[in-house]
Image (cartoon, rainbow, N blue to C red; front, side, top):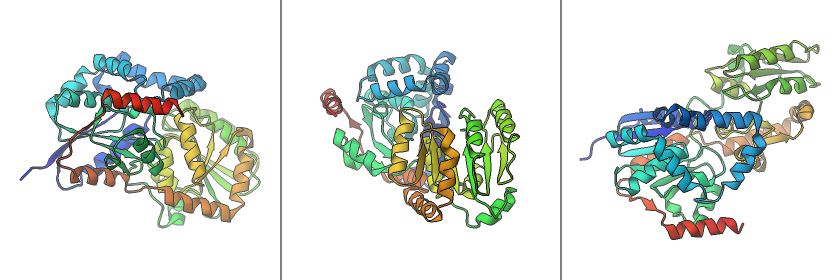
Length: 398
């Protein structure tokens, strides 16, 4: 009789979504029979400082200072295997401690919530260095070519459309599971929203608008506050500024200019109970990151999207709009006007909440873990050179 499975979960702290998805999977693993040792690591912690800065700080810099360049690169690199050899060489030169960790652990199951460690494990599988099964959890609604691996056992994706895309590329349909994006089990709709609002110090007689500046506090929340001061209806706005004290100062200064008694503002820094704030809200104003959007959907929380980052956030935005769970504001100055119109239309807001409920995947992490435990004898899918060229050619013709 085979013993408990050893699970290695690998993420990368380039943004927070990959790490949060890994944490959600870890939580489920630790409470699931049949799983023994669980190791959850940030792959970037096993690289040198220069490489870590390249992956994490460079991305953040581009988001803040050169989003157009980031979007251009996202689109240009979205061709199967176009940057594969260069990235693999770069990763192998800088991730030797990570390779040693994987080789020492010899896990039965590996789950990657970022494409960088997936690429390393895929290489080790093709070289027969490890026997582990490689599963890749995509943390956006759309699929970018950098998530493709030369060898894998299973993909977990957010949408049926994403699965259709991968099968059209040539990947076997029975190796792609539509799980949703794994979110912490704490997220979900409140069974007693009024009681939760009282607990959080919120009024129960006016709608709650939640504004997030992201965990790192880099989104222009003060501009959102300025626009929301235009609201003509009674509302309360909770602004979560994240790990950025300067952002909170700017938001506090903007809030201090509010003269109308119609809109009440509550400004927070970084919070540990984001699940409660989402469950208490009627509307989320945020950029459409994959994890933030998935958490909102699980909470049945409609979104107002502004200024999505070119590339993956724009594609996430398209999916949210298509599913009827969000509105989008192309000019932040009119955000207050559009939010006011939505909150004044209770039937439309209710339809959006219902659409969010349908789009949400609260059991995504459980689906990932349950699926992996059920598989025992599957061999790796290896994509040979001819198949890679066929995939690339398909995408070039689109």
